Amino acid sequence: MNVVLLSGGGGGARFARGLAGILGPGELTVVGNVGDDLEILGLHVSPDLDSLLYTLAGLVDDARGWGRREESWHALEAVGEWGGEDWFRLGDRDLGLHLVRSQALDEGVPLSEVTARLVRQAGVDATILPATDDRVRTHVVTPAGTFPFQEWYVARGHRDEADAVRYHGAETAEPAPGALEALAGATAIVIAPSNPFLSIAPILAVGRIRGALERRAVRCVAVSPLIGGKAVTGPLDRMLSRILGGTTPDFVAKSYKDLIDALVVDEADHPAEAAVPLVATSTLMRDRDAERRLAETALEAACA
Amino acid sequence: MNVVLLSGGGGGARFARGLAGILGPGELTVVGNVGDDLEILGLHVSPDLDSLLYTLAGLVDDARGWGRREESWHALEAVGEWGGEDWFRLGDRDLGLHLVRSQALDEGVPLSEVTARLVRQAGVDATILPATDDRVRTHVVTPAGTFPFQEWYVARGHRDEADAVRYHGAETAEPAPGALEALAGATAIVIAPSNPFLSIAPILAVGRIRGALERRAVRCVAVSPLIGGKAVTGPLDRMLSRILGGTTPDFVAKSYKDLIDALVVDEADHPAEAAVPLVATSTLMRDRDAERRLAETALEAACA
Image 1 (tube, rainbow over the protein chains, first blue to last red):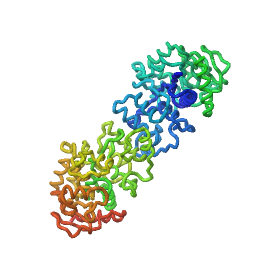
Image 2: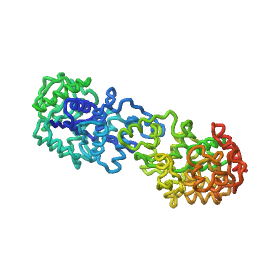
Image 3: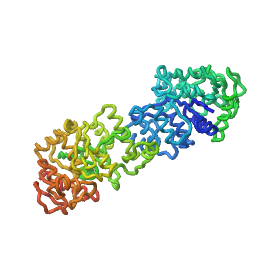
Image 4: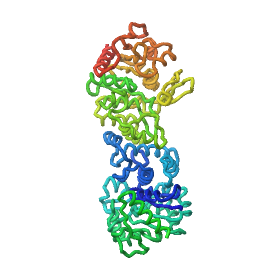
């Protein structure tokens, strides 16, 4: 089995953990979103890659949904005391990772290689690849102006309605080494229950990744992140309504037009009509068993 | 009163606190050593300036003698877990300062301006100036090779005997803005009980600072860091013996040849012969009162 998962952080990372639990060592390759990466306090932060790493390594704070367990916040408190930028939540243990990665990047090591080192160091037996080693940055177009992703999401609390999303740098970005090979050698391709606009589209904005998906020789199945037309967390329901016109499975499927062969949706959204076959199941990942069951359902649909 | 103090960290910082306690707001300018600054984990760290800042701001961990009170070490633990450089002890709260300063330096703000901002932010009413905004780095020549200061001191535990000390970059370094003006306008100049080779010489290695001291119009008094010929902490006694030939007050005075008008020494080192007049007192700064009394004695000698 060689499964390639396209994923953001958060729910995508939990889904990746579900998949990792049912696949053998080395059978899972996760291609992670880097569109919400940011430079803050002189550090390079890759929130989605970190969520994937922390979740697969058993380090994540499951209650919070991001960052590390047993975290403290003393460095950021001091940053604030000294008048520095403290709006982006960086915990002390988390900072250790950002320091090590930023130093390696400054020395010219590509993000994919840094990520591979961290994955090895954590003893994770899946592969985590950034979509690209190039700089791709998600910007959100709103009535109040266009904002870099984290400024819109964190600093402004995603209160401004999104009219469109742009992926700066994607037009010239190349897939990270290994990404096209993983897609070409995949037994199945799965798109995690992540935000299509904010987590998956920045991956697909890398032209050769999108092209590989369009020309896939195996099935690709996406998992809808909506339950009853509502986002479990985040602004996806508002975005889908405003940008595509609705939140039923058909609108989720439309955001992956030509790229998927089936869509896994929650029972609360079924029955429904969509351009691709729907597979209904319980999609709320309330615990590790639920993550695993959802991953099994998606994998079965992808191998059908 | 305008008092200029040349100082390293640790004991020098405690002496600065003693001086600050007897001077009025704005009457103290500390010119701090930057020869033991280092770049670690992509951060610029200025250990002596930090000791001065933390001590004058009431933030220092007095028991440890450096760094911040109520410190935690989670970030550095994580750095180690991820395979990064964790030999230089950086606490979480301390990291907050390094992040803010490093970011400002990366943006092109000179070290002196960053330091002034931090001093203001901390509400310290003394001036702290780096000796220079240029890059000066202390290297220690030993039988085992020549090492950058922190590698010799921290990573190798200063076990290698020092044959000489070099101040890379000092030959072209200019005094930080305000340093020459402070010396020219000083009522008295004091050299803190810091290590002459490792803390004070890197300041004096900046040619125009040394020149200003040589041509001083006011008295300059140094405080010996030795008690009974022994260093309170660190390797100074071994260095003085090996490099100059002894640890009596005369050898301390020799390390400040042409620069001082008197030397304050501990009663345990007195009576003694030296090229400058000696002032004997109790120099062990066991508490805040002792810091203050030592500062008073030195200031009286400098204003005599």
